[in-house]
Length: 182
Image (cartoon, rainbow, N blue to C red):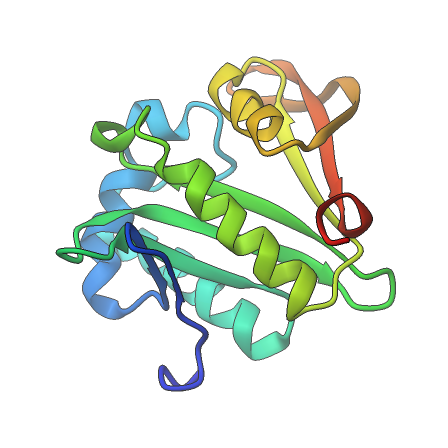
């Protein structure tokens, strides 16, 4: 997608912008870091492998199935991580939110602020009725983000996926447009 048309989301603190080729190394640092990928759906061992993630980000926009933003400092442009919507279903007006941060930025409220911006965009621009989050049951930090953001816990699918040699459970959270926008 043309960078000029990609939506920038900004506060005094954060800038959410389109991923660029210059972000490849930072994406690799995040999606190869053991603490980040412990509960994440993808991981990479080389920069070259990480290019597939960059193609994924660009492909969402091109196909109309979502948008992912590089989460950065609005002050100095420091790269923090990524946040976005994927699996956008226009018929059912819903999408899935995902996010990750480089570990040195954990616990600073960055991801909550980014999730808020992305959800607002999803509800107002994509006209979504529902934004879902699917989180590994053991991922306490991400579940806390969902609770802080007033996402409702909808249930757990017990041992529904096989990962790293064992079955894992997934917790489902959702936010509805009617509960956010009055």
